[in-house]
Image (cartoon, rainbow, N blue to C red; front, side, top):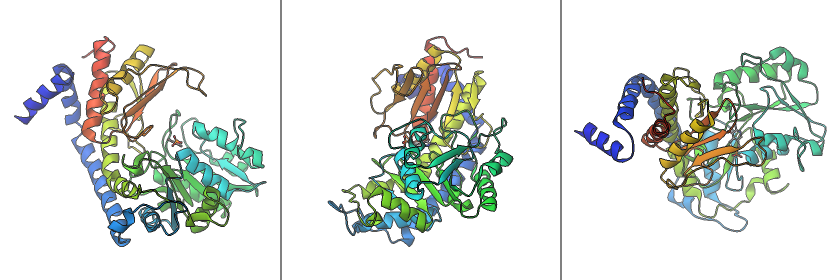
Length: 430
Ligand SMILES: *Cc1c(COP(=O)(O)O)cnc(C)c1O
């Protein structure tokens, strides 16, 4: 009975019965996979809950502070909760960290000094970090402050090039930046355990090297985090996984007390550090978002796997493929033509709870060599834990998409993308 009503509802919301049935066939094969994801979410839910209980989170922690924000016990307790969830010594979790890039910048700039060298042993970092580090000449970059940078590319099979990494480390090497997620690059995402092996290798060569992991898109995808396998710092954005879709702004830095403290002096001012920083009444959203995050991440993961299976079935290239283990929430689908990329993004947009009536179009975004199309109908601007898709309009015409605050919304968005391709005769049903 529910099943028939559901079909009627999907049809009313613009999905053909043929596609609904194809979706069902794919979903039926994913039961075991989904139950594994549910178990990971269950464990992470308990981890977050325990940290909140252990820190005696209470109504008082949701009160607003203003001005300097001295004695903001809601903020300080939230930082204890984050530290506990990540099994780290300390944390900086602030609305004043305005994005993931900013949090990474503060962690780097707070811990590096002129004459120090930073190494990326995992190849080129996320686009926005090129300016931060000074790989691309940029005002205010670390390079301008006399901090040098070395990069060791991954081997062609995506593995770490241990020999070259060993060669690249010198007495000047103060810090390593390790990006967990592939982001929008064509390389694998690393598992936490692979990151652990890399960190052990680095520390064997130079025990005092500070290992920072860019944890964006990775939080709660596994049951352990990089801080469980030796990372000195883990950094991420609250408008991705750990904000659970509810955090309206923010970033986090967790890790060793000394390094978190160094970062805090760069975020506020030397001598002030963590003591200041008003939270203006958003604490409850940061707590509640963290509380929801394991569940939200599990929905996004289910959506990513469902779409991988669906588009793989229809003959498109997908990365990761439908069977691979997942270490982040990003799904890449190679659609082979600009028309298909645009149709896909139109479908995702049309499925959104916000701005569903808007048509996304490719535009010449600053910093890109070609037009880029973006689909997002989000409650929080730019939030990519909400269902969203981006694609540069260039061969091989790959769209990257991620998120979905609930599995059912992710599923509808993917069906809607498929419908959009179907309406334009861009897919053949077998
Ligand atoms: C999103 C992301 C960042 C930071 O991006 P912001 O848009 O500044 O939050 C950094 N690294 C990776 C791998 C990311 O996915």
